[in-house]
Image 1 (tube, rainbow, N blue to C red):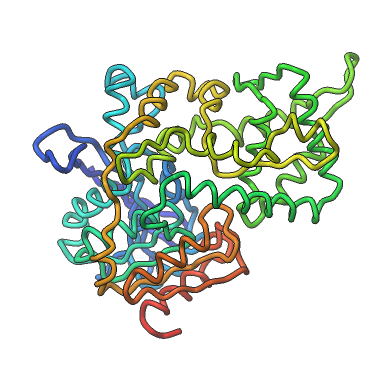
Image 2 (cartoon, rainbow, N blue to C red):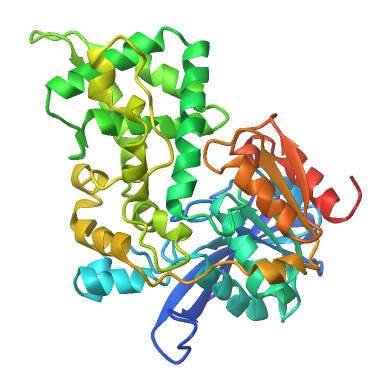
Length: 433
């Protein structure tokens, strides 16, 4: 049943679709997809072109906007927008510790999750496009991992696109996960240095918290075991436009005095557990490294292995000296599946995915070199999450792609910059900028 309702300035419609789990076996098992259609109230009865939004992640449902927030207001000036919950996220047949046991044991769960990468998401888009647009092509806006999906779209089904816009999400076409993380750790270190330059008082605060965690077994109210490494992973905040400030405010209120001495405050623990828990997006942890798998090499906990090449990130070694503690960023580690109660039941499944050697290519360099779809991409100058050099190499490999390289925004520029970012990129697809 299709249900429509209103928010200020917009009409929303819930859309539900059934698609094959494996598009190579269309007569087999199916899953459900959910998407929210959004149109400006004053254009609700107009015949508008469509824009489909692919969220960053992997593992996150589409943004839940209220009205015309962020970039959406600009898009609604000329498009009817489809906010897709990619498979396994949001209202689309969820994949988590509660539902995955329906598949069977870890081996069956790992086999199931092989169908949750960019290639399957793009085939979902093509399957539902016929229902949504009547077969007409649409514009795609891909943020972060959504940009990875967009490059797969250009590789496999460009006939479905009138234009493509990518924000902070041009992937390397051929890098192994190890290459991705070898490029990532120096970027993360630069972001941490910039944070401490802005907030020098946080150097001692971070050291004090990590030292406390090395000496105490701290379990957060939701059951998350807060280790020094887990604390370091809060550095993921530093990739966002307000992340450094958020981290600073978190650190400044970490301790409270008690009869037993200083301890981590309830307020600090409450906020930290919300930042670290994967309960709302477990697919991010499960398939994050799988988005880089393209050949017979396993990902094999790449971020964890490569981190060993950067000993300056070792908390215990840092605290034995007098240097600043380094936070980490967008990296997934096996210990997360021990610390996080939302991930613990999925540890064996994650191990099997890390060992897989049957990854298939996600991008077609020859087809991208012959691309005819208008494409524009925002590349953030020192993006913590997606390597700028990798992105620019890919940009040169896609025929006709126009880049906007900027240091005005961080990775979340399409949110922070809102209408201005989308307006600039749409203009680039039309040779208007």
